[in-house]
Length: 188
Image 1 (cartoon, rainbow, N blue to C red):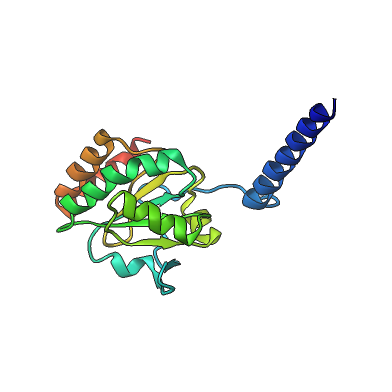
Image 2: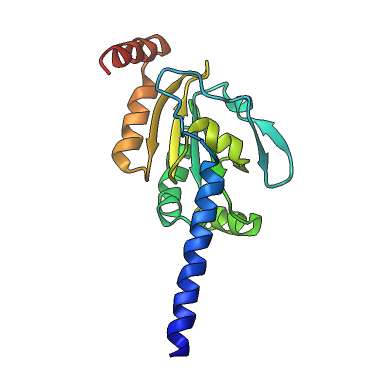
């Protein structure tokens, strides 16, 4: 009988913890906003590398930038890391990739990055960065052009087709990418 009470109490505590976490993340009256394709991404926001240095995302915007929000406790996030690490190496001449880690201990991040062969920059971000991008789900990935225009985004795990789509998009001349954005905005 006592174990039933313990299980019920544990469930109640878990539900309370989940509720408090959601209340913190959502905040009073907060409505999640997404930056829309074609809008300017908030690259002036700062992230902190795991060696303690802070820098704005725009420091990497000399090339188009793929920003991947992830966490060590997210199975979908860690599952896509090897594929993303390979993609970053293959496309290093024309694309910067940066991992933005959410709510994960530094030692776990370092171990995960090493285990999956991630060589691109990985940084922690305050919740304000997550909010500014509208990264409601993990993983979330954004591709931003050199003028800070959002070209592509996905909430959820990347697959091979997504990376092929990103490659095709980035192989087009910048003027053509912007022209396509204009068409996409007019067609919904």
